[in-house]
Length: 178
Ligand SMILES: [Zn+2]
Image 1 (tube, protein in one colour):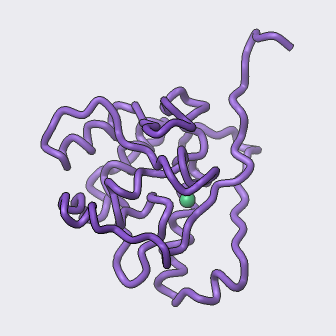
Image 2 (cartoon, rainbow, N blue to C red; image 1 turned 135 degrees about the horizontal axis):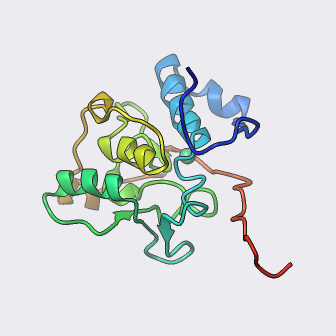
């Protein structure tokens, strides 16, 4: 049975990468990058705005507001969380379409791929898939914890692969001005 989700059957996602870029990655890294892009195809970061789950796009503090991802983020921080921090740097296609690098560091769905370490799929991302309407198994997420404050403060992004989501679909306005 095909996965149930927010897409119509005839909607597709296309992933493009340069040979130069992919040639620099080993097989394991290629798999992780492929996973990252595939999750975009399932709607992670690509349809948040269409679902009304993204607030503050284009500002210094874009946030994701879906309930299950917030719950899973709160479980990591130990606090009540009203939102999940979304990437606020990296230019169009990176910002507003991923989790915030300075908070989530090596999590799979941050804009920068972390070479030389595991890029886990967290329960926050799996919870986010539930917010989009998929049936999910939160326990299938990878083991993941947030970086310490000290580690987060010393993050360096320069030599990492950065993902850009291009050609995001526009929100459909129903009954608006034509
Ligand atoms: Zn990406």
